[in-house]
Length: 252
Image (cartoon, rainbow, N blue to C red):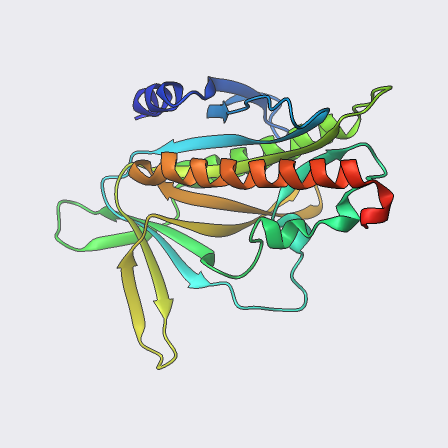
């Protein structure tokens, strides 16, 4: 499956880095992220402006359905700053006050779930069993930790003549088999449906600090289309930054 993903992404013009090593902060040992993918095409009209997303991918070649369940209810306590992962330069930013990134990137309750499970068949019996496999949790944790490490690395970056940058990281679990979403309608009836992608609110800890990372779960067949949609939004944001830069501070 990883080989298929690499080939498909390269054919679409992405820069792909398979099996990138990261350090496990608990054991000190190296672990591997399945794939990193970027797509960046320089636009001469966007002088010294760069907007791009790095896609951080883990592959799950599931034989039985992977299930997203428990829709995330709305709450005033939600930390939307955890829902999109990005850095910007320069700092302080001349443009962030003019953009609502959480609206632009759809950091909302739509298609957002707080639980997951994998289905397996036990002892060749017809019934399916739901569980939280260690390898799936490890993949989700690797995605979350890699993104946080990259943001920390970029946060120390400085330059004399800064670009206007918006760099996003999108962690994604790519499932090769069936993806199912479970929701309860307004009548209290459980609805089970096939889905192409959904978002999982993944809560974890870095040492004693609680963290939240929203990880997209997407089917292999839908992956390229989903990435193209995110790239299109990045291009829209680059155009908006260009317009703000041309107009200057009065545009705020």
